[in-house]
Length: 80
Image 1 (tube, rainbow, N blue to C red):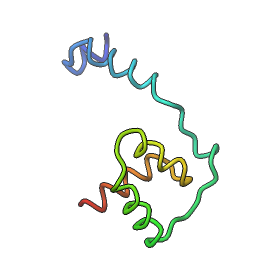
Image 2 (image 1 turned 90 degrees about the vertical axis):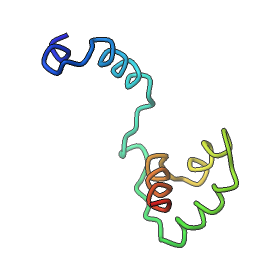
Image 3 (image 1 turned 120 degrees about the horizontal axis):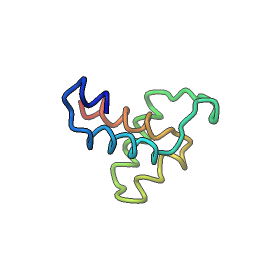
Image 4 (image 1 turned 45 degrees about the vertical axis):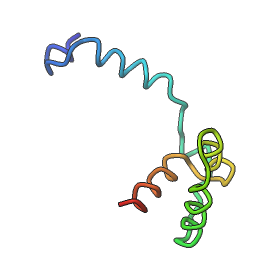
C-alpha cells in the first residue's frame, strides 16, 4: 500500500504484478552452465524456430540448450 501511495499507482496493479512474478519459474544462471553461441549457431536456431508455432516454438529453445531469455533477446535483435 505504501508503494501505491508513493507512486500513485492503484493498489491492484502492484499486487497483480507481484502475484504474476511469483508464478514465473525460477531462473538461475547456476542451474545451467553458460554456453557461448556463435553468430552462425544463433542464425541456425532462429531460422529453424521461424517455422514453429505455439508449444513447439516454446519447447524449441530448451531442447537446443538455450535459455528462453537468451532466445527471446536473439529474436528481438534479429528483428531490430
